[in-house]
Image (cartoon, rainbow, N blue to C red; front, side, top):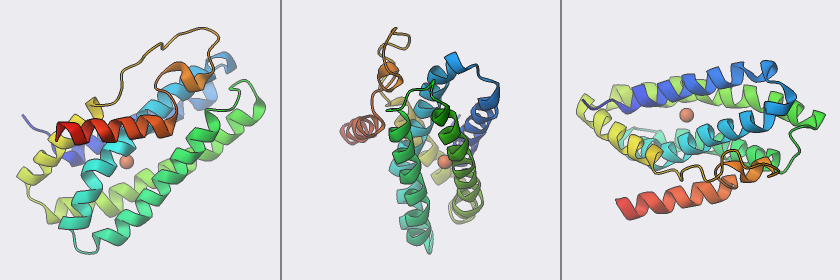
Length: 180
Ligand SMILES: [Fe+2]
């Protein structure tokens, strides 16, 4: 049975919140791995939203353009922060400090998406359209590159899972274009 894009995105937001809630408990030696998981979660989610959720908001919801611009700007700020973090040493004290700053920005953005974007989409679109968008979103999420060397030793965290944020986002956008 198809699932609405609203449910899929809400579930992803819960996953991101749970991941962030572990931040203070993660031992320093594991922080690089924790960051790689966060980066994968966020990049896949955000690119999938930009390909499915935001075009629908722009074309099918009155006033959607302005809201899409504001939310996408927040996502791009988070992507830039992730790109900066992937160049840092996860053992350095400033790495954790930066992550602690990123957390409220990401969670606040997710809250705004739920109150400002998902609720409007829910009100404007019928259940079948929301399920179609759910299928497109799930396809976009599954088009992310797979893990190459998740536990390769002596590799900076930037290379552990997906490669740099910008490259991953580009590869996903290309993969979706080819599939559609
Ligand atoms: Fe989101």
